[in-house]
Length: 109
Image 1 (cartoon, rainbow, N blue to C red):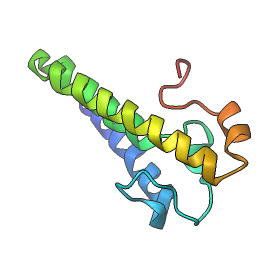
Image 2: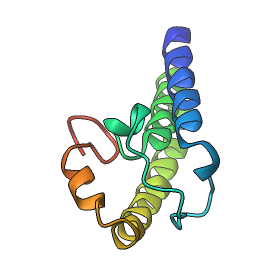
Image 3: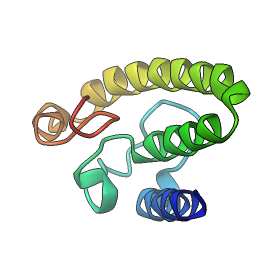
């Protein structure tokens, strides 16, 4: 399990570094440009994916953490929907980008 945590922690760090100064808790896109490199080339919301993966690992270790994982997933999916709408409004190229990348979970969405 420690390998799982280490890999997803590295994924989160890579995602954070790729986003750079655009990182913000506010779902409103900034005018720094659309990120499509690093982990963003495959997943449009890689930081959320990393958080969910770490949460899933926690739930596997302690099933009592499962309700927290469900709550986290619901909150992040809600935020993804808001961000996707705002990104489409802000960046005309977002539709094309969304066709070649997964939204949150590779091979599923």
